[in-house]
Length: 362
Ligand SMILES: NC(=O)C1=CN([C@@H]2O[C@H](COP(=O)(O)OP(=O)(O)OC[C@H]3O[C@@H](n4cnc5c(N)ncnc54)[C@H](O)[C@@H]3O)[C@@H](O)[C@H]2O)C=CC1
Ligand SMILES: CC(C)CC(=O)C(=O)O
Ligand SMILES: [Mg+2]
Image (tube, rainbow, N blue to C red; front, side, top):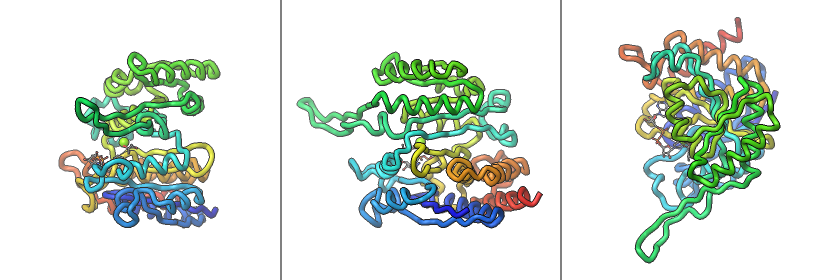
């Protein structure tokens, strides 16, 4: 098959983990007889520096014209505190909005080989397999106004949590559809004891739930959910929640797998190309040192192959290679135990590539 992929390396460790992803895609292409054409685009800090805007129009146009988008990470201290729309996050938020990627799927899978890399007890994390469905184009990150004001008694700030009912309906429905393919349970996470937006969220979840009588629906307040994720993560199957709640809960949930460097994501809408990225950021503290764990991005490649290209065998080969590399004991610094040999980003990538080739030939 011929596929065009828009590749957005971004900032910090973004270009490093994207280089790993491209090597994996090249390996898939040559082993499965596909042609992947890469068109590179800018986003975030690098785009501010070179084009004066965090989201050049060309990046949106290229993304729309491709079969899938692969993103590293954006941002860093140089750009994070720029005021207003020049924040690099606007670039990331902007592309998500421009592609209407309202559903962000963040699978949290505990690899058996990494159980001891988690700081939690073995019996808590063993066999964890949950899916966070994060609303991605609305909520607190998108509400207007979002600004500083000068009031009569001094400076003030405002951010707004705004949702249309239809936006809640479509993401909750997505969660129920996914639950139907999994263990048939949806946990809708909100703050309905305080927020009006959450009260509507809960009403909508109840109403949509009636369309899915085969799926169990429970509601959980977000503070409790944060605690339950650590206390007993195996109670969860599909978790659906507002943009910021999902952002925070998924970083927390990554520690069930041992590291933020392990969690991939797919952002989809059903129409147009999906966007695939690790859930982590640009990690300025380790950028440029060949230390980043590339597995979250490589697993995001597997999601791209599976969801956007329907290349199931190819996606399975990448996922299996990641599992086998971990089972063989290969570790980057973030998932290494004391005394274990630490691989660089490039070395870890080579191990995955070797395994993909082995998986394919066996
Ligand atoms: N999707 C994106 O592009 C995101 C961008 N950001 C941006 O990234 C920048 C840094 O944000 P932080 O809060 O530091 O979050 P971060 O996710 O970049 O890093 C948090 C911690 O996790 C570590 N880490 C992250 N990914 C890793 C990997 N693959 N391998 C090993 N260790 C890894 C980092 O070294 C750091 O100690 C900020 O500018 C922020 O705005 C943050 C989150 C998501
Ligand atoms: C700009 C932020 C919302 C990025 C982030 O932390 C994420 O999407 O996980
Ligand atoms: Mg985040």
